[in-house]
Length: 109
Image (cartoon, rainbow, N blue to C red; front, side):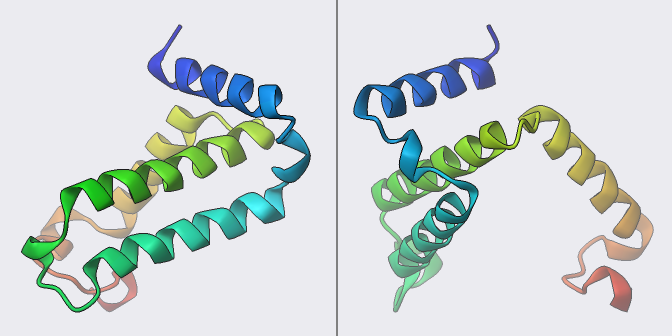
């Protein structure tokens, strides 16, 4: 069993034991991701980036990933496949010779 499959299996079991599948539709998972991402942003509010509490990052990032993994599972998306595909697409949009050291968006390169 891969690491990703182990995580998905444990998430499924956790939700089934609590009868939470009924609450984890695509819309609510998307909202959950957004809420948790906002909580991650809050950890940085009024601080220098280096002053953020790593424990807070750990907690909020785990929440974001849990909801993201559940959404991928709900829509039968292969997490490894979609991540590698996105990296390939970004490599095409942001060729090294044009984007290295630049924060410009691909259409501004």
